[in-house]
Length: 254
Image (cartoon, rainbow, N blue to C red):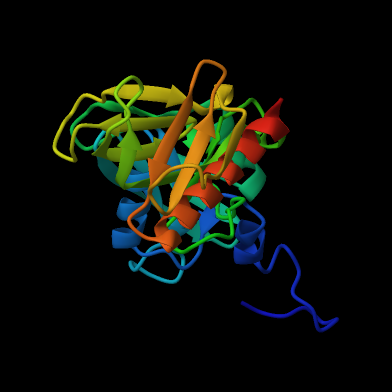
């Protein structure tokens, strides 16, 4: 890319600079990493634009379609973008297309719906590296409508020891945290949860020192307080931090 006479790089001469301003352009993301990202954190219809290994002016639009990820080629010539049989004279036209024509035909002839651009930057809880976070977004009629309509979502799973409601014995259960739901199962292999707790109804999370066990914390709900224990203090602290962060996001959305 050439520099302008003033020593800078103009928008017309720097199309990739334009793409960097696009919130769902992931410059350095590989095909493999894209598939892992969309399958683990995205949903059906999540899509993003990334660089392609086909050439310096080649890009790929990657879309999650149910349980797989489809990749579509986008090429650039100057400020013109070619996508399938469509040619767009500017990045503005290109983005407008995805806001208004959210359908793609795959190689199998089926239609894939583009629902939510997957953002390059999301609000992450600064807790620990294993937290997977994503933001749900929606497509609108203009580029300005491509805004977040849901909180950033953290996920976590693992075994915790839970106290029974009536008989105050302790049993190990498999817990999963996704969106605003905390579910617990008899064990990791069970498909159906014993119970689903809606964190929208949770009023507090804190360490608890009233039990005979160590590394305990409690989740306070209007109808019941749930007592849980981690195997280690670090593990209990991780659960408390991610759950408190989740409650803070719920509070922001109210």
